[in-house]
Image (cartoon, rainbow, N blue to C red; front, side, top):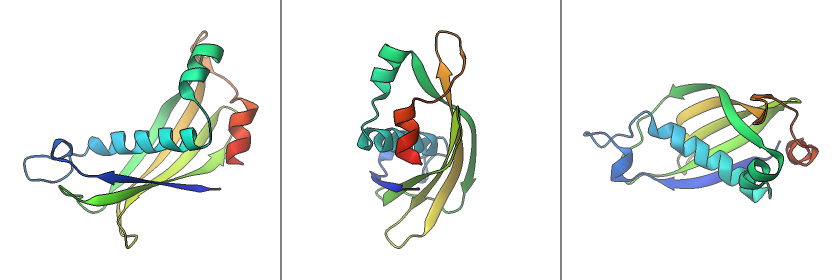
Length: 132
């Protein structure tokens, strides 16, 4: 499945008192990269929310912290869909540097939810075709 790379710079607001990325900031980096990946595929989450009342929610996330990212680092969030099911998909995401050294990695299970029923639902066909 196709890979998406999104650059990030580590800012002061991302770090703890020691200049190391605060652990919860990785969640935001991964979320933004997944959103940008969808946007690049011309999938507009706001349109799905408004017109189809469908949302994508994180059902499960496993994060492995390998190396500390630090203030001013320029890194890349690498994202790839590794599994597609009717109502869920799994992303493998990594934060790497320019020589492919892995700082952090995550496996993220995303579910498609019908907001009217608050229950899982099948992804739209257009959405699934982008990731097969």
